[in-house]
Length: 341
Image (cartoon, rainbow, N blue to C red):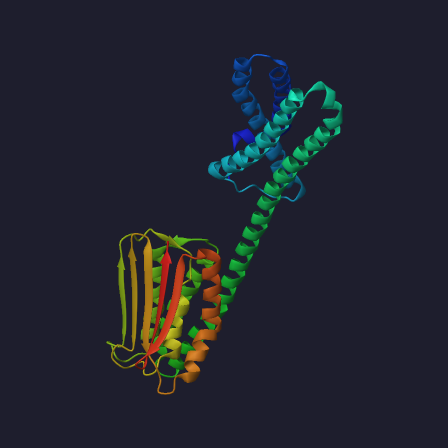
């Protein structure tokens, strides 16, 4: 990411902002003119902002040097961080000024009695301000750690998916070799194309949905080589924006399960796959027939490696913006994946 220009020379911002803020506060508190004091308030708030920018940028540069970390803030996120720190600092200084003004309003004969109490108040204000700033900074650190862990786990889960896909596909090709060597050769070529896509897409965070569709078509065509009934498999696509991006390799586990757990694959409409994308709302469904004894199938489908990895990836990538539902009814197994892209 290109460095933002106002991240340079943070100590300069800090010292200039702090010096001017202190001087303005001195002038404000020593002046007897209320109008003059009101005029100095916005200037003081601006110099506090300059000080806060220096503090935040010192922290960012410290992390960059100490932990070899490159900040991932856009302009909006950085401005929001500045605002939170500025608000907390302004509140702390304002509270201290109020205490100071109240101190001057106390009669002279009892000022000495409450002097120590006001010192205690000033210390509390400073402590609370510093604690609030530290809390904001530490929360940013924690969020960054969570983001890094999520990305690392996502990469690991995608790496788990690739061997699972290869295992199932090679089993299919192995069965095809004994039936038709020419078609087996075609299957190997298609598998090579699929693995190339898996290799490159696994390095991406997002990919165009039309690329995922082409990948699914290749996979389904590979499976067609072992199906004699032309009406057994169908794949319906209805998307309004092929360039809409999505995390890669989310739909392939569901398609794999269709073929892995299908009953009679040569039956009419043995497997029906549908993909719809309208205004950023994606609905992907798979529907396949089941073998006569499907009790063990349902358990495997819920707890298999492919779906377990898929659910975990969806949780990491889309949080509460997805749903994954499955249902066994009338000898068929239906899975519906909905994602708000």
